[in-house]
Image (cartoon, rainbow, N blue to C red; front, top):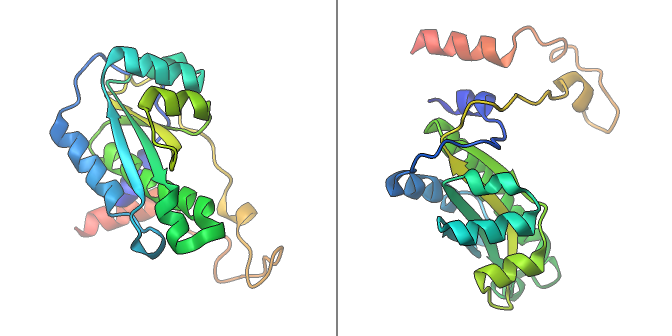
Length: 197
């Protein structure tokens, strides 16, 4: 699956089949996360894979989202704040969050390209996650990610169109005749590129 197709296809999955995800696929997804851009290449993220049912229940409880139990694989992304602070002092938390976000997006898109459902969960009780995973004091949970084979019940979320979200040269300025109105949708561009290949 091409990158544009994965971006277009990806959606948050909250309903999973009871089907094992091979460790080889998990490795591919994690490798995509490791290859994401990160501040100064400090590589301060760690990934905790959870497959144990009792542990998944603890994570689901910390997130207050019971559907997480259905996912065959849960990955918790954590950041080493001491490592980030040694380079960036006052910006360690911000940069750690940004590093996690780029890694997670890579992982979501890779999972989608492998036909795996996935979801990024960012609301959780920090203390409960820390206790469940026995995190050292210098590590902070950044996000919970679920992966598995989708039951196919999720719906694609509507997004704003570019015209309402993009400005030129300064905030609020929309005078760009060469850009608007768009002549082709993303799907149209993908179809045209696919025909060429």
